[in-house]
Image 1 (cartoon, rainbow, N blue to C red):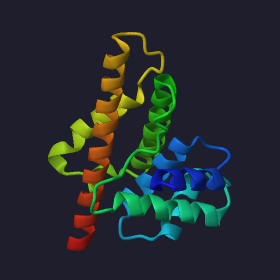
Image 2 (cartoon, rainbow, N blue to C red; image 1 turned 135 degrees about the vertical axis):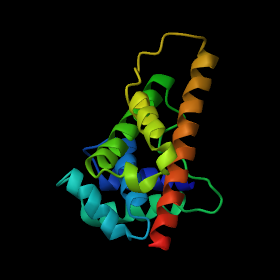
Image 3 (cartoon, helix red, strand yellow; image 1 turned 135 degrees about the horizontal axis):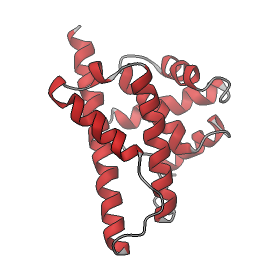
Image 4 (tube, helix red, strand yellow; image 1 turned 90 degrees about the vertical axis):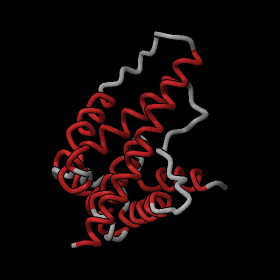
Length: 174
């Protein structure tokens, strides 16, 4: 069983209410917000945004697995989006991920603590624009659509890793 399959399985245990990408976006935002925290702290932060979401222990396990992947020195972190799904379903999953991630960041005003000041406004703008993605993709060839999706997903993946690293370094210096 791959790491993504384990994470996906735990998302099923943790939540029957949310799409796995939405749950992952919430958990990743909680981890980026408090990198020195622990799975219980992250789960409680997720629960503060979605009270009664799921069984607490499953959410703690899900957060632990998400943090393990995010903090990996191999930089193998991926957004939890099923690559076997049709493109329109993956676009919907990406939108769920970013909307949930942004709900935590915007509500807690994490832009000031999780990214460099010079990048803050541009990142906020880029994330907000991506959240407006239309899942009705009709322009360009299938290959062009796939490439555009992959570029957006890769941007979010790398930016999330960068924000996690920035938060970690900030916490260590405090």
